[in-house]
Length: 132
Length: 132
DNA sequence: CGGTATCCCTGGCGATACTG
DNA sequence: CAGTATCGCCAGGGATACCG
Image (cartoon, rainbow over all chains, first blue to last red; front, side, top):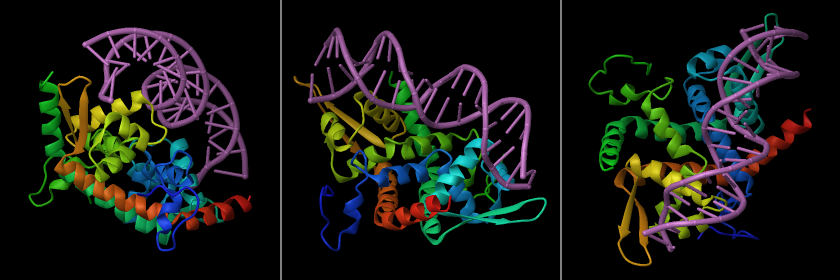
């Protein structure tokens, strides 16, 4: 189930890029998307097209360097589109590509679930910690 | 939008745990879930209840230490249930809690999307790299 | 404004060895 | 089998300074 090594049956195209195998490129992309700053960046851009510093304010705690790196990785993977207008002062906007939007939708689903169930999580933590 | 600091309006319970703010506990849980090994562990357990070493084999590349740490964090957050039978040799099974299953479902959605769109991603990378 | 370059250091992580 | 303990590396990431 899901462990195709050589060729892919037509109709199951996903199996060619199985994230469960160590050096599949899909694992790297998944890490860009679900990384500490990637997930928050994509989710922020799902709400709005944003400029660099606006994004930096929205993603609380991210450094300039990490935001820059994150955006570059996401742009390279084709999830984020960078639009620079050659004016002074510079004006650069970041927005989601169609694929970026589909990805962000999934991430938002996940975030909403986690946020909404935090009371349950906190209760579980209490029980776990008390048990030792 | 989404930035409640003190109290929550009834009917918008998610906003109490906004992942966008730096020290919200939900951000930590989200990192456990979407972390490098967390996402793969949860996804593996979505297919099957698994024992430690079976899990280790399924999540290609994970070390014993990291798998152990990952499982502890997920158990503490109430996403994974650890069931130990006191026999020799030890027999321990890991499975998803109801919340763990809901979470894993979202992760699988995301994984399937990324896996299925890798050709698109790879093409974007090619374009990006050629442009410099 | 929108970044890149540099420095520096912590802690994430792998490797190895050991235990019940 | 199912882990814990210990060590040590190096890359992820923060802080700061600087550039177009």
